[in-house]
Image (cartoon, rainbow, N blue to C red; front, side, top):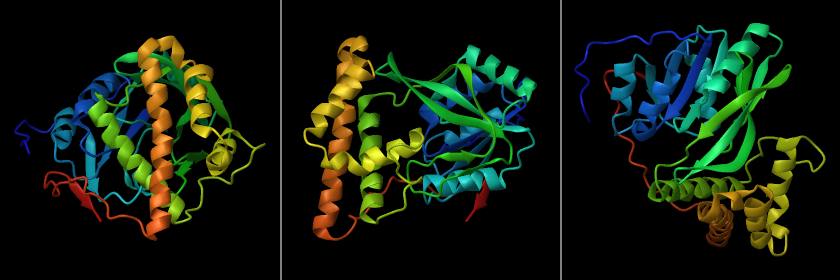
Length: 300
């Protein structure tokens, strides 16, 4: 690992009273761009790292980011730790993944909404980018809240923030650049589907109760529970991504994305079937986390 020989620096507070929180494991390929995107905007930035072996720690230290290291036990657990233990001073907190970028319009919308002080949480519109192309695929995600008002569902994967109070949608886009290439994307999806299948096999409690006529999150949980019984499900799933979500507008890139998203569900189903057939969760392939870095604070 590279050694940080530069003198310690401090993050220069930006114009928005927002603390940005990220969790990482070998995200240096995204992190430099993410931190550059936050300069002049975020009041402070925190990172909880799971023992990266790439220059993630070096990048954070050089940019004055407050970084600690802690063993990863699940996404819900790691995010709740971050919110509970990091010394946040900003009155608002924003959850960000290293592969996401805030548009200028979104930054301004967040500033304006915070100044109005009429909400407890802000819902952002996230736009997907794939193979370097902007896709006509978007999600509405709760990502900003008043500090201390949020907790995450305590699940291994697919964690969700829970914020009580008034939620408001804001204008602008949160760009999701996902993976730098297909090699990285496929590796990430392989691990993701393994985690999903293991959660199903272990009969883990869903993030929220599945309800067909509930909220959007409850409907999503209901769909995931009953999807496996649907005849012709993978054809319908492809048509949903390609046609209803509008991936066809992105040409061949959109077709590839829709096809691969469908295959993610197929891999999820096959892995779950294997676990049920064998009666156990297969041994996890190590993701090669490194040793603790003596330059940052460690947590058990």
